[in-house]
Structures are given as C-alpha cells and as structure tokens.
Image (cartoon, rainbow, N blue to C red; front, top):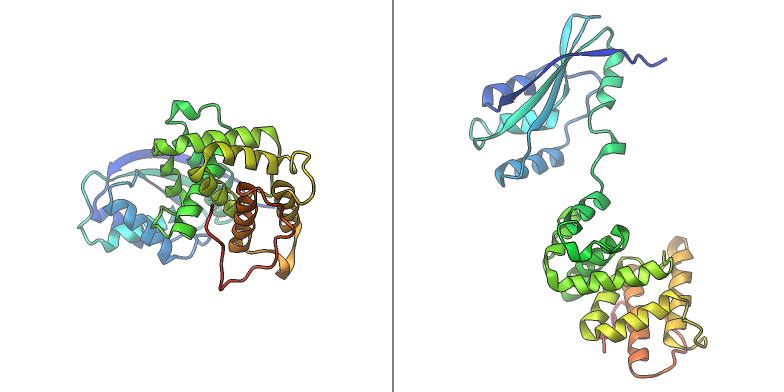
Length: 294
C-alpha cells in the first residue's frame, strides 16, 4: 500500500538569489523526481528573461527514515536559475514549503501533490480568461469562443502564411476587437446545434468566408450545421455536411488531412456563392491545393 503520510512544518516567501538557486539545484533530489528536460528549462528561462515569471514554488522534505533532506519540487527552475550565474533579473521570488516524511515511500505521494494534472491550467481555461476581458463576448459559450479564435489562428497561419501566436498565446487574439463579430457568429451557430465535425480547418474556412461576406457566411455555415437545413442532396450545404460528417467519423490512413478538409469547405462555399449544385467534393490534389475563396 502507498505511504501517504507527510507533514508540512513551515513555509516562507524569499527573494531569489543565485545562492538560493544553487542550493536547490544541488540539493539531493527525491528518488521520485522527474528527469531534467531541457525544453522545460528553456520555457522557464524565457519566462524569466521576458518578465513573465511568477513566484517559483519550491519544496524540500526531511525524511526520518534516512535522516536526509530531499528536493521534492523546483528541479527545472532551480537548475535554470543557477545556470544564469547571478545574471537573473531583480524582483524574482520563491515560495518554499518544508515537509517531513516518515519514509522514502511517502515521497512519491508528496510529489504527486505538486502541479497535478487535474488542477493544471488547460487551454480552455486560458481561452476563457482572455475572453472574459471583453464584456461583448460574455454571451458566447466559452467552448465556442475558443474554437472561433483557434480557427482564426489556423486560417492566418496555414492559409495566409502569417506568423501567428502559437499554443496558449493564440488566445491573445481575443484582444483584436475586429474579430469579435466573428466570435459572436460562431457562438450563435454552435448554440443552435452540436457540430463535432467542425474542427480546426473548418473554423479556419468559416473565418475566411466571414471575411468576404459575413451575412452570407452565417447563413451558409448555419445551414451546414443543420445538415443542409432541408436542402436537396446536391445543395452545397447538404453536400458539405455529408462530407464533413464522413471525414470526422473516418479512421485510419484514409482520414482526410486538414488541408483536404479546408479545400472541401472552400469548394462548397464557392458553389454556394455562385448558385451551383455540388455533384461531389472529389479527391484532394496536394499540388493544386485549395481554390481561392469567392
């Protein structure tokens, strides 16, 4: 049975110094500690050098079984700060917790208490935070707003070729108020129906069509989300809904790639805009790519 006994003896917040970082970096590691991953160190270093680092949460535990004090949290950050060799910026702090454990086995359970996955900040949380800064987006379900912004980032990065923010930085795009009408449109469409087949490239295509004609885009995508809204099978909205649903449900090597999904959306949109029926989506030719949006 896992040993779950530990006791916190004290805690303190202290200004960061090179001596402190070096002490933690060279402290005997807990036997359950993660291996050092350089990408984590690089991420933390960038945060420090760009002024976005918050207080470091470090912890050590004294084990009664072998009368040894171990580092149980702070491996990557202390090593990274020690490597700065005293050139770290001013104003950094460490919050240090001190624990006592009866046995080495208890260290594993203590280790699990730091940064558990269940309480970690997830992309949905980050997106919701940036969305929450704008009162006009308060009525948009957070999941819909997140998808909308990810679609914008996908379109600019993959189709336009712009250097767009990546990862959690994408959600800073909420700060561009010119995008808010698009986010609101996505919220209206997604509130009316469940559309799991509307993945990243579909949202990217939605944004591209919205840029060209917002009113027509909402009507078109609203009908696609409603399985063609009762139109005949060759109507572009019905044909696209059928294709997207099949693509979403497809598994294995035949599953369409993102560029192919985007092309299907463009073909349907262009047929819709010119009043044509859509006989078939056809196979994707990487050399030809997707046509321009009309």
